[in-house]
Image (cartoon, rainbow, N blue to C red; front, side, top):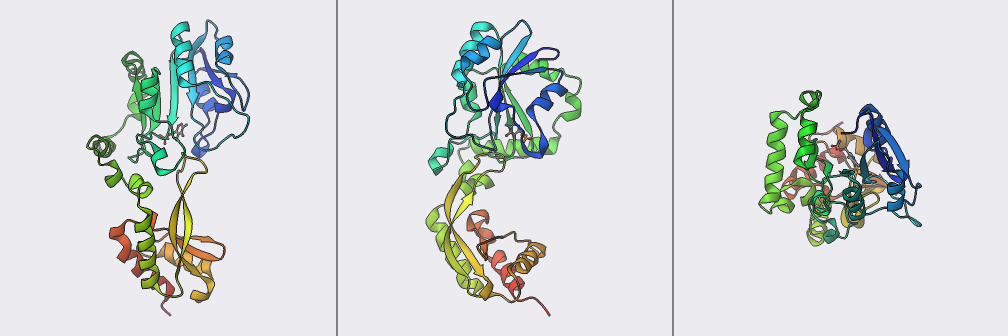
Amino acid sequence: LAKGREVIVSRGEAVEIGGGFRIPDVLRESGARLVEVGTTNRTYIQDYETAITDATAAFLKVHASNFRVMGFTHSASLGELVELGRRRGVPVLHDVGSGCLIDTTQFGLEHEPMPQESMAAGVDLAFFSGDKLLGGPQAGIIVGKKSLVDLLKRHPLVRAVRMDKLDIAALSATLLHYLKGEALAKIPVWRMIAADIRTLENRARQWANKIGHECTVVKGLSTIGGGSLPGEAIPTWLAAIGEQGITGRLEGLAARLRQGDPAVVARIEDNRLLMDPRTVFPEEDERLIRAVKASLEPKR
Ligand SMILES: *Cc1c(COP(=O)(O)O)cnc(C)c1O
């Protein structure tokens, strides 16, 4: 799309995502020249416009998916970029990040950009992840103008990075849940985000009662994300085990839990081992309780 030409990116969006992947490196590797505009915290549509040259191949908008800049900030909207792009004949590419197809604000979370919003705004191509908040297999998905997608399909490396049939089966199974309107009930990440707080409290109480060992129930937060929704958390109820409820140290208990079968990953906070029912499906409750009880009573 941009080999040997320039791609204009806001200075605040030349980001590094998980695993050390950096937008400037990806662009360099593709043979494009990155042209940074604006400042770390404020970039206006005029900054893009003044940077346009005969060598401009695209505007690239990148979602700052794993960090947040607060305070005196500004970025050009998708609408402004699309309008400018149309007027000056520059395609708009949007790295959306998480592939979130459901509005996160209904769960009290920040709004996470959605690919359908990019399409509605008229961007030429949108890129997003097949896992993260889409909840399917690891995959990079590109949607948009057929002429541009066709161009990408003819790249010599496409064969090397194309999806295999198992991933395609998993991705289509995931997408079918959205089409059937059952994503919240069927896709693990959405089941967890949408879990009812009263039900979580009841389950935490049942866990605590059955586990014993001075296991109590406390209010807490579930952190959402992993490359999306930075700093976002929603209220939950936790089952908590303190030092006095166990023999030995909490770290030892956490290690026995992780090494058990099934493996249980808890977290330690304020001298308590915490377990969040939001991250465990109700049908797994009995196995979890058995695993925790077994770890609390180590065989001698
Ligand atoms: C996660 C992410 C990617 C990469 O997506 P994967 O398909 O999960 O590797 C690219 N860009 C942004 C902004 C992201 O947040």
